[in-house]
Length: 260
Image 1 (cartoon, rainbow, N blue to C red):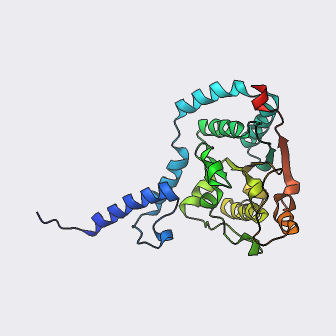
Image 2 (image 1 turned 180 degrees about the vertical axis):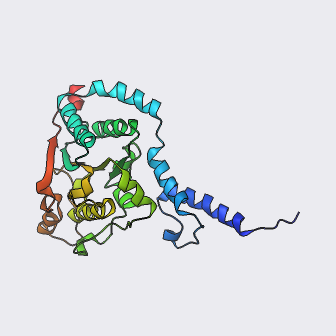
Image 3 (image 1 turned 45 degrees about the vertical axis):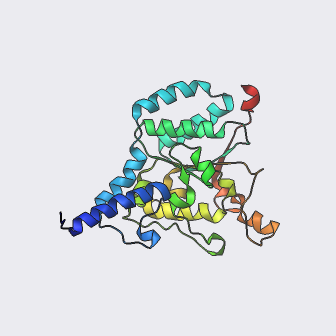
C-alpha cells in the first residue's frame, strides 16, 4: 500500500522525537544541530510550564503531612524562615550551610513539596547531575538556567535565556529557586542568574525579587579553575561575589545519623 507523506506528518514525528530528547537530555533538536519541528509559542511554553506544574496535589499533601513532624529544631527554623520569605513575596537570597548528614536534601525536598502543594512553581537545580537526582524534579543548573560555559572569562555573563521563550516564562512565574551544591559553582554563575532574573522579571531587586535558596558546604569542593591557583579558586568562590553580603545565612548542625 502506498502512503502519501505530507509535511504535517514529518513535523509531528519531529515533535515526538524532540519531546523525547528534551526529556532525556534537556536540549531541543536545534541545539543538537538537527532539523527542528515547527511549534507555536503557546505549545512550547505550555510544555515547560507543564513540567513544573504537573505534580499531584494529593500526593504532595500526604508527603508534607507525613514529613513535617519529622523536622528537628534547626531544620524547622530554617524551613519556617524560607517559607516566610516565599509567602511574603519579598524575595531574597538565603544560604543553607549544611554539612553531610544534617538532612539538607530532606529539608529541600520538603520545601519543594510545600511550595508545589500550593500550586506555585518551585525550581530545583544542582551543580552536579548526581546531586540533581536527589531533588524532586531536580535538574542541573547549567541545563535549567542555560548558564554560559566560559564563566571565568566573562566580565558580566548572562544566562542564555531571553524574554518570550519557554524557559523565561517559568522563571518569571516561579516563587522559589533552590540551588543545591552551589559551593561548587563559580560566583559568576550566581551573578549571571541575578542579572537575567532582573531583566526577565522587570524587577531591579537582587535576583529579580524571587527567593533563591543556595545550599551546600564550603568544607567540601570549591569551584575548579583549570590551571588555576588557590587564589583563583578563592576569587571564584561565592563568598567573593558582590551578592554574598546580601545573603541570609541559615545552618543545620544536628547530625541526623546519630540523632536517629
